[in-house]
Length: 326
Image 1 (cartoon, rainbow, N blue to C red):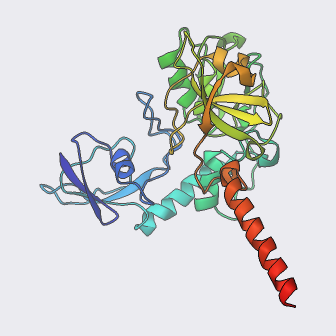
Image 2: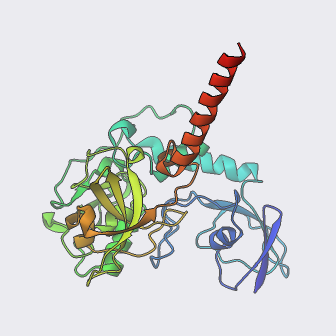
């Protein structure tokens, strides 16, 4: 075990734990944001640079600070290490710079993007972004390509986090897409215009932190804050069958994998569950999905209906009492 101090809070974690996962064990506001790291994907992390932290003491044996900011998702802790995240102005300034770079080529099409309301880049931009861009040159754009009937690729929105590539490498057979070209021309694409088509290909949609990969079967169907995310399951011979079904009345608009509070998929699901089971009768509904209060999806949400009704009744009663008094 190793003792590490993050933002003046000490925690003991197993040897080999990264700074990011140590902060997640601790919880709270000291958890660095992460756009490319995914705990279920081997080799992920180190691409987006949003999880930069400052190590003011390397260890108890060698208390010298690290000369530069380090990525917390791939830097292991050492006993006696002292880390600054939100308590370091240098880290916050660097994070603002990273967000500005991520938004340089990202189109401002949130109103028409299906990822709006559950986009990690939206949250990151709101917390650390600038109010205006200083970039005066033409944005990078890519030609639209067809990668299959179920998945839509909008490369202009991609931040090259590599999550979809790692997902396809590790849970599917015969990956047909990846990163081609280099530098400013690097893009996610299929090899020789092949289509992404295998039993677990839809998981690239769930791991994408922005709106670059979206579900064609639910594209432009509805906004997520108008839907009711419900935990549901079915007996499936391909996957765990544990999903989130997004309902509007008795209609299933889309089906996704279950994500934890850091936006990472708990268990990957097959394409049959994701694309083909769009009837409520196909599922055993477990109950409402827990939604973070900071999410726009939770605003006026169904889980608070009983509280809203109680508040309305209270206001009506107070109004009636006031009228009687007058």
